[in-house]
Image 1 (cartoon, rainbow, N blue to C red):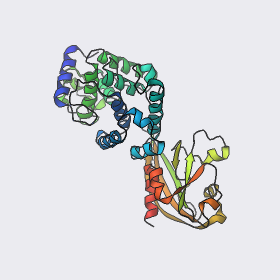
Image 2: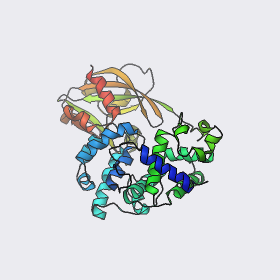
Image 3: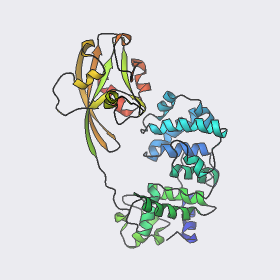
Image 4: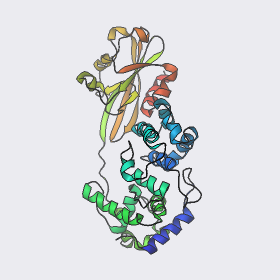
Length: 370
């Protein structure tokens, strides 16, 4: 059942009174937003907590205050400002989309869902947020917060994991957004899910929609939505920090269009189209010494010494990783070393700037302790 006008009125009143102060949220909650700021904040908030995003958003907007300024930036600088947020394909897509908006739309955001969703990295949710908050259109959004609220209100015992179930949730979201106040309804529901209708220990006594919530009436909020099955995969590997005689570090350019079978074997599955440290899957308790896979990156006769320096744990998507770090020092300068085509040398002083993932930084931090 859709939220009736009385429930929506209560929702709006609650939001206007309780909305948190956020750097991407204007003090006037009825004001039109800058669609660029909406786009950046919502993209940052994917897979990342609000508390974490606040400082990132402020720094980003100081450096890239408009889509036109962003479009002139290079990838390395954009990655540097994204460092720590993970999922670097988002940052790359932001840069691609900024260029398209400037080249094809004169630096102004398109105002149709079809045009927005055709842009790199902008999906149904982000397009809806831009149109709703930035242009006050009657466009729906659907994120994890709204899924949780709709499931509890209607006792939906399914997740939007297939096309039919997803459409049920989207239809409900469209009904909520079919109003001149759609921008308030959408943002109020996101806020409600974040602060009141939480996944654990929801504060039902403070919820403006409590009287319309079937799960609350049946005291079954903990059962809705149904739990998502998390599949976690163990991955054990070795990370190589290969240093030339003249103080340069070898980096892998993990290009997704790699066609060579030999190269594809060593193109890791985790950092597509990113520069990263060479690494590969390896067994636990492997014999001491130089792993055979390391010789893909550097010939054994070029090595002065190689030593294991320690290990670290890291999670990427469903992978629970345990990584051994090996430092390899070479006899020759970078220019004199024979290395694969899908690699490049980076001066040691620039390595943490150009290799932006936490995965790389954890590896390099272990080496610095040596």
